Image 1 (tube, rainbow, N blue to C red):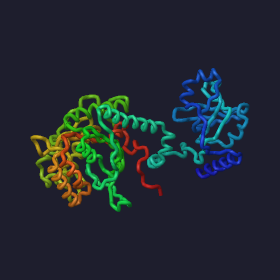
Image 2: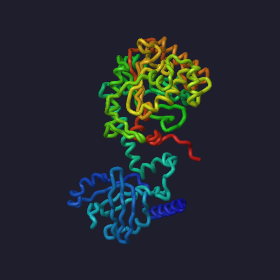
Image 3: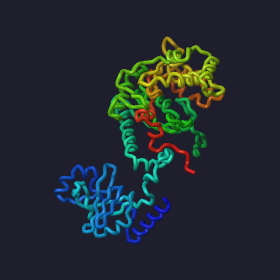
Image 4: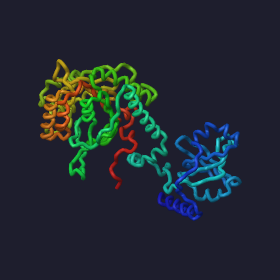
Length: 482
């Protein structure tokens, strides 16, 4: 059926060419968008001024000497009317046009007997002949994989999909505007790194032909941004792509957009006040409200966000002190919970797995989860008075992490020691453990001021939209079509 429709449209394309017309001209005539024509309809109708509109045909109703068509551009939709007496070559256009074609139409605005705002076409020009028919009920996009793979069709037929990405533009713009208003400088950092760092994740590897050297796609923005603090900048941020060679699920992608900012002479206490204010502004601008739906729950972002101690929450849920429990005790608990544990998983990895099973799902309303064990955060500063935990906070809502920040570690000796512990974990088989970055440690040895840093990815946006994260990425990475 589809092949027959395509063949029929190709015949129409040949007919257009035989008539000496270009079905894909390089220029088009449009004096205004459809929304503007509707806004100024009364004045334009009264004046009888000729205007030109352009867009895609989304409907056709042939009634002999008159044809009604719906023309749509990004701003809206308007009815076109082709009449035999005002469009002499009506029969030709009737024979070659299809739903999905791009056309421009010049004429005057008027209202039909039924009161429909319309444009009576005096001249029509084909701008792009569509060879494939647009999806319909029988040729649709019911399969999620097809819809994501052919996102252009999803955008075309589902206005709700377009709305998601309009909101996403507002989401990132509001973050950027907020930070710039607070005196932060936006920078652009390298995507290729010789030593990937700043997060626990397996990187993508590539080869630089000119340098004959292997490089990695960055997994975080953290370390180069902190080098800028060493260099004298005090407030810096980047909104950019990061790449992590890990599994796919409703919360994780392999390449995605992340915001990270670093703030000299600040700490995680000041950071929490700042982040709560920033999130509320971003959420209100994006959603129009501070109460959002997530599954069968409502998340209320408007209230003061409480602070929840990581170690206390872990102990309450599991009966174990995460800072004191041995690896064997944690491993036993993980097995009780039927968790998948890598053979050589270290204490930090076990704590994190147990936390994700027993603590995280219960944190539905916005809060800050603070002060986790030092084993799970190699880049954060130890808490004064309790060196077994670090000054880290995570924004939690909807049972997941929606941002992370901490008082940055700036002691080069402590940083080296933690990197070396991570290297031991890597040697034992933990592919996500961080590498020792000698260049970063050397930078710290020149001195980095006390600072706070924070990162948030587009997972936050997916929670605000109540969608799996792939649904909120305009062209998610897909397995190639066979």
